[in-house]
Length: 211
Image (cartoon, rainbow, N blue to C red; front, side):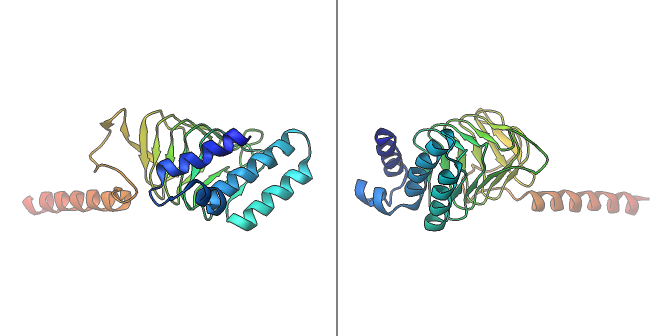
């Protein structure tokens, strides 16, 4: 557990240019604190100490604003950047080297039993405000854009955007015309649809005018 803790801190230092020192990250970063407390809660959960597990997880939520169910399985070097408003459900599985921003929900739809929450592959980035809902997998090396609502499986090496989310890039190739994606340069699916409708109306008006 001590080795995992050091890895978690160093992962933040590698990804966050604002991080100044090991001890700053270890003592003051809420994401690191939430993960550290979750590892303890998960240990209690796996050993059947459910009340103690929930006590630790709820205390972590009050302190950090990050709610991770003690049953969730978290891999190595998870980075939670800022973290306020993050919710991670009981049957969620998160791989290694994952980056999660504030406001993310890894939840269920209320329709499933048993495995109800997503599985997140290795080296995945889930941007601010994204919602991943259901018992499917986000493939390795994939990116979920800010505000996206993901309701079905995402292939490896993909970028998804929109509500509901759709794949716009896979294996380095564009699926449809889009800008290089980051947390700012994200296509607006509503605007694209409106532009498509406007173009269709102009075409129909032209046809009527020709008659």
